[in-house]
Length: 586
View 1 (cartoon, one colour):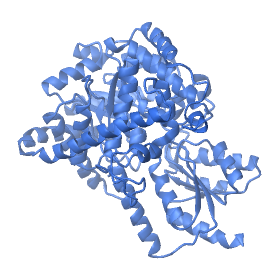
View 2 (cartoon, helix red, strand yellow):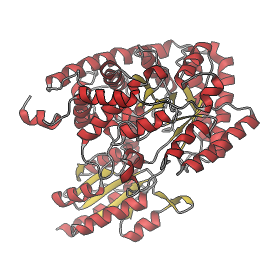
View 3 (cartoon, one colour):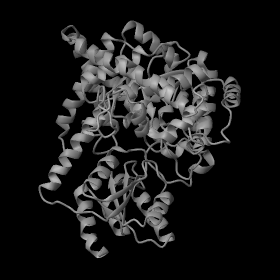
View 4 (cartoon, one colour):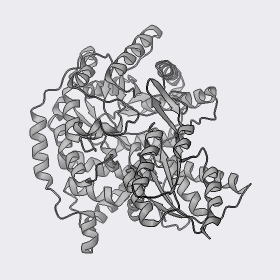
């Protein structure tokens, strides 16, 4: 390995993992986890141990997401959900307290950062309420472990009685104003050690894998290998209990069941997974709610059937039918539980009808390819000079390599230049298939009316948050029509976007945003451009919504346009505007 490559992957001042783990275990050993109302009701000291019981006796538990702004709002909404479920005789067990990305920053830096969707825990009393003020079991996933504030968040969560603390899959996430990936990953290693110190108390390192590289991989075999690598970091090298969960990007019921069974096959420590998430990618704002209900019910029916036939202890989630069009209300969440509870009754009746052999065939292909990919991944990292017994080196080097390069280098599929990453997937992910189909459909629609010539147009493209699916489609379409695209990837700060526009003399910036802060993000980017004396055209796409005072999820399209940016509902709008600008360059 050249010294330049070695330095890019592993800087010379990288801290030693042994000391980070020692410090983390010392911190974790001094913690006393609270006992939650949920634990007390089920006679356990940790949700993990109740999950193990459910796995043995065939009990299905249920999970919901809630991302309101504050703990009091969240607490009150959960109280409403609980009471309505009792009235309807519905079961609900746990809630993911979906966090604002600012929770990944250190507490002193949170107030000044751009507000996004999700809960903020501002005080110790907020955290304490998770154990004492709600009947369902709370978990923290987004922006906890894997973030700059990993240690702070892990300690706060454990003391609040939260058993499943995530999300190591988010090791690739960026945070506003935070530039040191080494410090972020060092804090992550230390936080995993904090969790490891509480292993006997039932505390688990959670990993919702769809929120990380797995959402970018084209091959399910690579996804499984990635889980094996994270298991090595968490369990083998640091000593924590590790729980990978999945679901939102899996639309095909056969693939979803097969991947879950593959995850269970590599779960040598028998840690119950946190959840199986509902399919979100099959829902579309253009569909009717009735069609959404059919999609959700089918998805949760087969998820429950798989849990009944192949129990893991994972909680089941049904996606609210309104998710693509608004932040789900209490009523929307209760409706999703109604669908899920009824799906369980039907699945128990229909279970003898299901032939699992097609699922086993796909599972075995994923397992074989995943294990081969994992072996190649370890050997490849070692060949690049990475100490594969050092968790920090693994996390930093893989973060710097990125999902695309990892799959190009070590994917299990055979070489094939017809595929974007040079390999035919062993088992293609639904994300890859959907992106391919979306790109085809968008191109077909555009070409039916126009054949744009964007040669000579230079565009800087980036996502303001962690969502990359839409960004990938846009970048691909722009390149198809001849534009030169500088793809900065996800979670890019606006000052870096502006710097790239200045450095490359870009004609335009394409900014994707989905986290409910579209207006603030656009305003901030334009301010950074003005500071540099740039008049670069700015195109903003994604979910163009933001909370404005007490009014939630306001469409801010007109406000973004009033700022001087170009809100785009479709890729075609952006192409037409870019093409119109081209003659002025001559």
